[in-house]
Length: 269
Length: 269
View 1: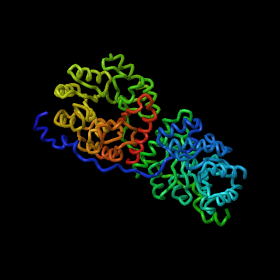
View 2: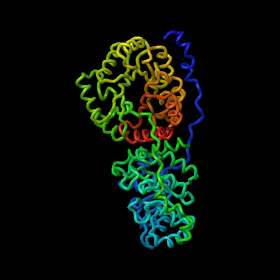
View 3: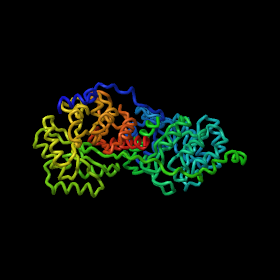
C-alpha cells in the first residue's frame, strides 16, 4: 500500500490508542440451580459441575441430603457446599402427602438452615402447612407441575390457594411446566408477583402437554420478555435452572442453558 | 380458601385460557465455529460436537483436512460435513510465509469448494495474494492476532494494508486478540465495516496482553454492543466461536459460549 493510501486512513493506525468504554453492563438477577438437575450425579460431582459453570446458588434435593438426615449428616453436606462457595438457599422440591411429611420438611429445612421450602403440599394440608409457616417463619414456595399434575398443573392453581394465606406462602414458578400447561410464564410473573418466591428456569420444545425439556434458548419460551418481567416486578429471589434433558450427560446442556440465560440477563440489564 | 377469596382473584383461575403472544423474536446473525476450536478433537468427534451444539457453519482447519490433501481426500471430508448438515463456509486460519504457501491456500480453497480463505499472508506477499484473489475470485479475510504478533497485532494493521486493495480482500476480526491488543472490537466493527468478512467470537479475562481465553460472557467483552454493531453495519458473514480454553475438555465451555452469544443475539434482535 502506498503512503497516500495510508494518509487516507487516519483512524486505522490509531485504533490501539482509542479508549474503551468504562465497563460493560452487569445485571443483578441471581442465577441458581434446582437440585433435580443433578439427579444422576453424586454430591461431589454436582459440586464440581456447579463450580465449573460458576453457578453457586442451589435448592438442594433429597438425593444429595436425605429428608431423614441427622443434624450431623446435614452439617457434613452443608460444610461441603460451604467449602465450595455454594449458597444453599432452599430445600426441595419436597412432596408432602401427610402431616408427617409436612413436619419432616420443616424439620429438614431447619437442619439445613434455610428459610424456604420449595414444596408440593396436598390441598388438605394447606391449613396445616400455613400453621407451620407461622410457627417457624420458614417460607413455603409451592411448585407448579405440568398439565398432567392433579394438584398444581399451573401457577394459577397454586396462587388461588395461597393468595389469601400468610404472606410467607408463595409460588415457585416452573416456567416449563407452566408453558406446557398453556400458561404464559411472562404473564404469570406479573400476575403472581406478590407471591413469587422462586423460579425454575428451563425451556420446552412445544407450548403443549407433550413439550419436551430442551436447552434454554432452543425452545418456545421468550426469555427476553421473562427477564424484563422479573426486572419489572423487582424479583429478589433466585432464577434456578432446572435442566432435565440427557440427565446422565448434561453438563453441556446445563452450560448452554446457563450461558443463554446469562446472555439475556446481561442484555436486558 | 373461602369462596369470597376466590372471587377476589378472578384472573388466577383463567390463567390457562389466556392466549400466548404470537412468537418469540428470532434473530438472524448466523453463528459458526472457527475450526481451531476443535484442535484436540478428530473429525468425527468434532462433527458430533457441532451437531450437539446445533452450530452448523465452520471454517475448516488443516488438522481436519490437510492443506496438501488430494481432491479425493477433500471430497471424503466434505461429504462427511455435508452428511451432518454442516456448511463449511471458509478455510483457515492459514499462515502464508511464501508464494508457494499462497498458491497452496488458494488451491486448497478450490478443492474444498469455498469462496473465502481466512489467512495470514506476510506483508511482502500481499501484492501476490491480491493477484490470486483477482484470478480466482476467492476472498481473503486476514486474521488479526494479538499484541505479541509481529504482522497483525490488531485489526488496524490488517485494514491499513488492504483498504485500498481489491474489495475481496478484507478482515477476519478476532475480538479476543483485538481486545488484548487494546482495540475495542465494537469500534473495530464499525470502523472496518466495509471490509469485515468474518468474525472470531471469544471472550478474554482482561483488556491486556495477558488476558486469557474464557467462556463467552465471563470476560471483559461487551457482547450486547458487539451484536448491536454487527446488526447496525448489516453484517452478512458468520460470527464464529473460537473457543480456546480447556481444549481437551471443552464441550461445556463451547456450549456456554454458544448459549451466551445466542442469548444476546436473540435479545438484541
